[in-house]
Length: 193
Image 1: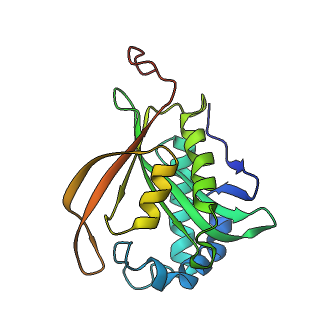
Image 2: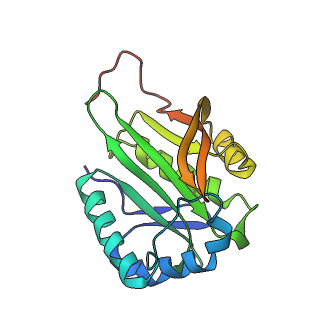
């Protein structure tokens, strides 16, 4: 069974990434370049040009179909063609791990309204659904990113550790705190499917 390509919350629409949303995603990145720069790895020139974005979204669509990654672009239900954020469940690992790595971002102008938590709640529920059936979701956050840490804790993620010099971001290797959310009803003695 495949993951749902569209998820709805009270205020949001999460759409599986695909080339049709390239212009909207490129616009999101341009609007938020300064806002996201302290938290994102550096990008090469042209990375956010519409055609480059379209190519990456096509690959994300293939990964979605294959079950190796699930990237959702987040829109307000009242403006379904304007991307305001994204959540990416990447590096899906099956077998005894049943794990994914979560990354996410939200428009600077919409911070502080609970939208990211609302979108991530829907995305995580889909990852734990019978369609995807993962056991664990991991996320790394820079210790000084208080807003992101608070979002993960509000969703039930537990702090599991600290990784020194984890990712190269904003001109230096940066430490990250590692969080995880476990499938809430997966029995300890139940093997992976």
